[in-house]
Image (cartoon, rainbow, N blue to C red; front, side, top):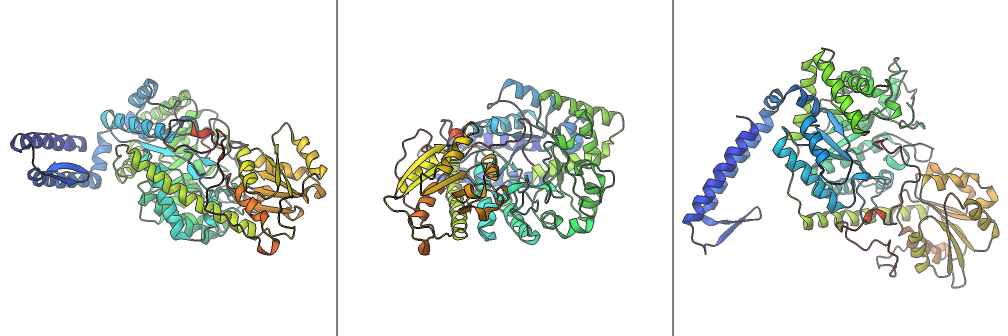
Length: 616
């Protein structure tokens, strides 16, 4: 008897038993609470026995049933399990239903375009898993890139800090608890896989497209943080995914647009980039590793991206590092993965290299082409059935290790998101405090007669600054079309304090066009990684806060109000003055209002191509 049959028989027995007990029980019998359910006392003994029997059956299926379940799948269903597909829309549509029924992909990935609100995505995920439980052979992996910083698909009332910002806590216990809070929030709205953390080693002071998505430059510290963060996700019921193996550190090319080449030797790689991955792959919890579209010609002379490299997957990750868990690709639609023009050929090559699951975030036609190419490759003998079964076994085992999806509980989810918001604010405050301590200058404290001009794309940042600043503040909107106006205002010298809020990479890099004299007039609040702004000593001050948060305007005003010898951010807990703008974050993350448009988190100024996974 397979797992679904076991569950069906147990549920039938449970229903019959409850029905019989209902006839025998008095209506006024005192209920007994177990697992939040109201159950008559005399029924409790039967319920306990059946629950124990159910648990044993489930445990048996989890431990012994994966091989049987894999053998029971048809060839098409097995190929479906290897697929990670994006999808259109924000609700469970007939189109999605047809796709799931015909192709039975093993995973769906949710992007920003699929998210209107937390409540909406919770309903979407619930509908997807409910359909899977009734019509598919296995539950779905529901994946999301919830790294924090700019790579945050489900936005929160307080923006989630970047990985670099989180690392500034220098407290692995806190980081583990933060990751668990993240997991609990994600699981509350139906996700079971987070495509995080990023394990790439990258120097935040140097220009890099990975930027503040990394935990830092010290391999041993990144390894400690990685392990704490991943354990936290796992403890919260979410499968962590380490990316991007073997590490993009030190590269400046973007694999969305090309295949970066990294000239490290194997010895250099093992001493630096692989240190966090060694800790992760040796861990004792369920996990996945995502491959990088990155070529290492001094290790694999073929010059193939690691996604297609048997040297990097089979020799290094599987054999040398002994990793037996799940391996997935990044989006095979990316230019960095274009070893073949045909998307189907990319799928077959990536699978033959050793990947278990293949991600396609492009149009449905490409997804179908990849599926059909894999089917033809197995039927034609290019991919052996044994090789396919190996990957299906790993996929099903990873799914079996995850908690059973729960019915959506709005109150529980709201509590989880509030907890996450509180911890996020603690991280963001800590980063501003560190930045301000490193940016002390001798200019005088602001007085009632002081003046400030704020250059910002975020009006909310300005309003929070204005409401706390002792003097008079003036707002200059910043955008691609008025940068010369901004330059002229800087040169006018009309304000004592000129504040430049670099909320995104474009505004940060525009600062490089200024002369040294122009730079010397600016106090810069940099939300990006420090390497985005060159020659920082030329500015009046640069506060590298590593993440966007409009409250940094309030904290900056408090900092400027203090005298230089006392200049540390007060960052008071008191709520800032009421701000009546429509964009102010006044609603719950579970409101059906479009909270995605809050100004508390900017839209990325230089986003990846629309169909890209954004993982790199």
